[in-house]
Amino acid sequence: MFCSQCGKEAAPDAQFCSNCGRAVAVQFVQQPVADPRYAPQMYPANRVQNHIRMLGILWIIVGCLRLMGIGWLWFVGREVVPSVLSTIVPSFTIGSPLSRVVEGGLAFASALIVVQAALAFFAGWGLLERQSWARIVAIIAGVLSLWRIPLGTALGVYTLWVLLPASSEAEFRSLVRV
Image 1 (cartoon, rainbow, N blue to C red):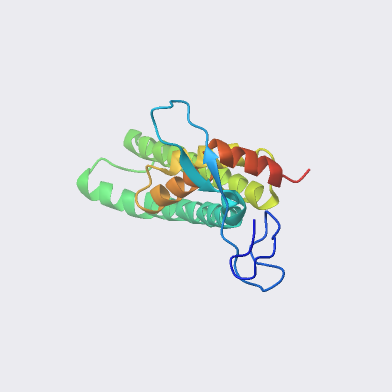
Image 2: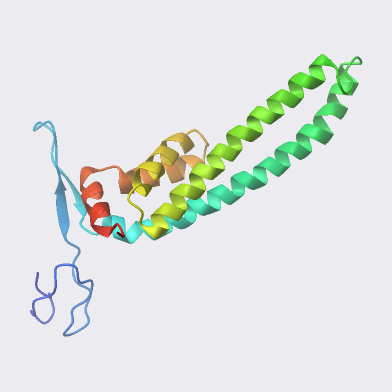
């Protein structure tokens, strides 16, 4: 690759010319296509490297927000729901069958949120530390967050866009810390 301003040869992974300082054009790699009827897709060669830090930070933020959601869930489940149910259902008291169903649902929802938060933390930490398993964990977290409209969907799509293509797998393997 050569600089478009001064003509000096630049390193393949350089973002700026070492001679004049001008930004060097981004190289693209071809995404392999299983079916030759479809046109090949082009992705920047350093796409994973450019986005991995942002993905890691976003997944850690999502983990924190989900843990905060547990506090909100317990507050609503312990304070609001019993008072509303006691006005709607006169037989609702602490220890009644309906109360146990509400507490069981609250415990199940809390456990589900804890698992989602842990998955988000592991994905974020693994991406920031460039662990070999982090790509798969982040893809799983991205798929599971697609139903959380709108922010979870956006983060899931962003994660899948960065990490899912085959060219991303090869680039991620080159970035992994041993």
